[in-house]
Image (tube, rainbow, N blue to C red; front, side, top):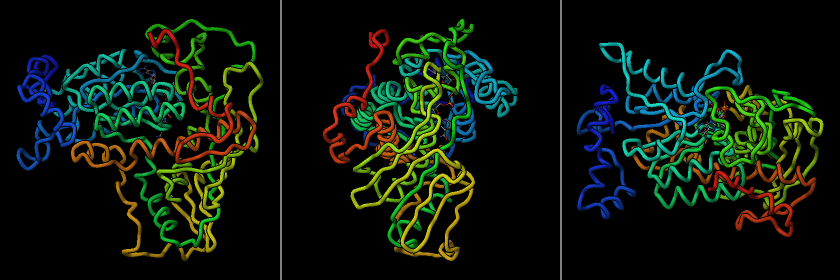
Length: 467
Ligand SMILES: NC(=O)c1ccc[n+]([C@@H]2O[C@H](COP(=O)([O-])OP(=O)(O)OC[C@H]3O[C@@H](n4cnc5c(N)ncnc54)[C@H](O)[C@@H]3O)[C@@H](O)[C@H]2O)c1
């Protein structure tokens, strides 16, 4: 744990005194580490007061772009959390989702130091390190948690290494690029007894919780169908014949690619826009789908399972040879073992998820800001003690992570939940890619009788990165 009032030099000097170093040097090393893996690292707040230095969760933010920068700002807002380091392969630039945004490791470092500086009499603070290579962060014993907000093709590599380094992890959705790498992420997190929150923040949205409560309480009768809407592509990218561009200064393109195949640089490939190329992400099916299909899975009580059938319905693409090869329009359907139908399609994204039952409909609208029911009277229903326990988090997904790091409880969106929701997205993408109806066994997590689909459950890693 670190004291935010200390500068970097002081912190380095004190580092041998931190709890982890102490455990490492102690004769009790092996038994203490085993115990530490199972119990909180944290001295109870009653001993020093809620925000005592020993009670602060130390953190490094890896990937500080379109989503990572605001997520980092949220963590900065908690008095019991201390951001010690940021990491990004981009030193600092525009070119993110909005042209006005200037993100990367230097702007992130400045933001952290400005924030903590305001809390000191001197008004200045120099205690946030900026890294290009996340592995240097994982070597630091004084960092308890990492926040991974890089493109999807990096999530598994970083999560597994972080778990092995003993860090607790907040990893953005969709959990991974493929089903098999998500399974490996779970294995690493569980083997190392880490707390891992997936960035499926609808699990901390009170409107969504209310919708799930109504569905699981039987307020709409027997659920027959769930409709999940996903947004359209919001960037076009270069068409066939596009030309390689020089890599901008301050951008480590090789480290951006990491485990992805080598590819010529183009400015539309990387920042924010990676989500439209299947080497790095699954298009809007995994981008939006990781939220809307997560709600479907939750409401249906399928957090440990999934559909048994998935079927391609329709997909549209940019012309062959375009930089973006993920479908611009996508529509797939699935079926659960109990007969519930699932529809996932490119449509009005503000209606993220709609449950249709024998007695009514409930849906989340306005991008999660409110929920609606048909008939209206369902909205007012209260179910008392019969209500299933859906309120694991309050209105703050990042806060829930910090609380769980301290308590060692399961967060609102544990890694298995993130895995199962993202798996439905991947199944949809695989069915769309093969233009097929596929049978899926959610217990063994295998396709039934389709080798081509099984092959798409994983990807070959880039050889240079493996070496
Ligand atoms: N929960 C949500 O609602 C939500 C919203 C947006 C994005 N996301 C997720 O966040 C992730 C990032 O998306 P984004 O829109 O912020 O992308 P982005 O391109 O804007 O930001 C990603 C950042 O990661 C950096 N990066 C890439 N490789 C790196 C590496 N090896 N080491 C360190 N930094 C590296 C990039 O330079 C970039 O600054 C995606 O997985 C996306 O699905 C979640």
